[in-house]
Image 1 (tube, one colour):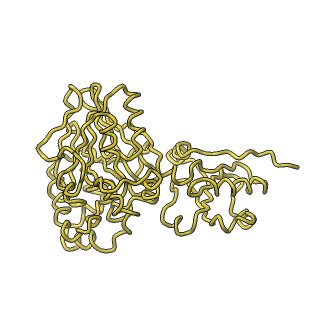
Image 2: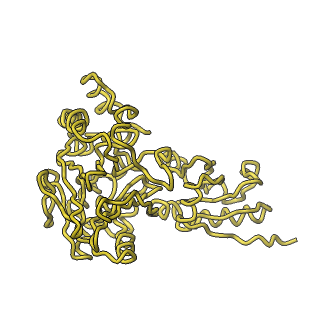
Length: 382
């Protein structure tokens, strides 16, 4: 009898909803073992099994015993073709509830999940864009017909479309620092929308395009209601790292402070030089701020940091109690923590920095390849 089961594709957006809703799903990842070990789909009820595609070309019999019959099965590869082939073989072997990830891990890397963070005091709103497969976090502050995008990623259409849906004009695009793990969309978004691109000047010695200097003492205004974005110089991850306080409620901490870790100081080769800056920012400057500020970082490390709906945030006072990176009282121990035994550096991070400086202009496909893999901006995993 011919198997009538039809192969279905699952989009990255559909997968993200399942992960965030803690739905049970079994993933057969057919990428090479090294790629799988470097970066994989994770979630509370996500079960993953890895067998390279080349081991399955002549048949999937070897993995049939690993494939459960009582779970939804998703086959994953880098781009989608290999996963479609394997998924079809599983269907021919009588397996049910089989689908493949449309666009593969590249589409998973690029998907942004929109989460509302909260309301601003004079009627505005703040939103978080969660790049769940990469761990990047971008933000949009909206007030009275205007918007600012902070740490926007290169998929700028998402921000443009959301601004259009909200009937607002993007007035500012802001990078809290020169990113090393992903390609910024800030400059491109500003050019496309007629907005102003802001970047800390101490990070921009080698930048070859025009920008406005994001410096402490300035105050950017979004909308007539004056939702102020107050920059605070907070070096350590980079020499120019600058945090933002929005509406006296939210602390956009860039890559200096995460929910469960702290930023690493070595991505520009200056770990030893920047340790003191990092400690001063975290243990002195941030401690002068209100404990009630809601910390909104530019990255997260693991899906365990995702809260309701995928939101990544934490009250500053709570982080000072629970975040291990904020509780290393001995300065020499702190120095060792942030300079020794660090995770591997982000894939292609030097090329990404060069791109964000405007020194090289990779094609879209080259940019996708450069960004494949996890972010590694934290001192340690959450």
